[in-house]
Length: 180
Image (cartoon, rainbow, N blue to C red; front, side):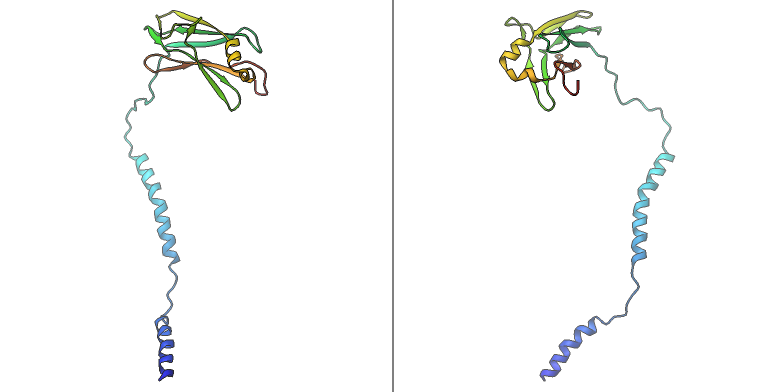
């Protein structure tokens, strides 16, 4: 009895796995992958061929620059004063928020908001069309505030009008570096 149970236990799994072998489905798998890759390509071609030839409106709007911002210095290297010049070149008057002075080194930046002259606040400033605003910025005040600012290489001015449009000057070199 024990031997027959043992034989039955051994024979049943062998009978379950003794099916006829079928060819692999590799070709069907390759065909499915080829179809999946061709579908996006065919859709792209149909869209391109049957695309309506309509004059497209330009998506980017042309924004007229209202302000021309420039930053100058008194010496080539290690300047003592910076000169900010803001010119209104638009046909309308513009309100200007307080400009921000950026000092930049390779990976670090420092920002200072310029509020006015001689402890008098002059911003926000109303600038009429065709007028210019000039501001002399003494760098010794910033160097007294933070001595590490003498090691920064570049300076830049960014400002906004009251509608939120941002204007900026180009970077100027404050001292020599490998990159300036």
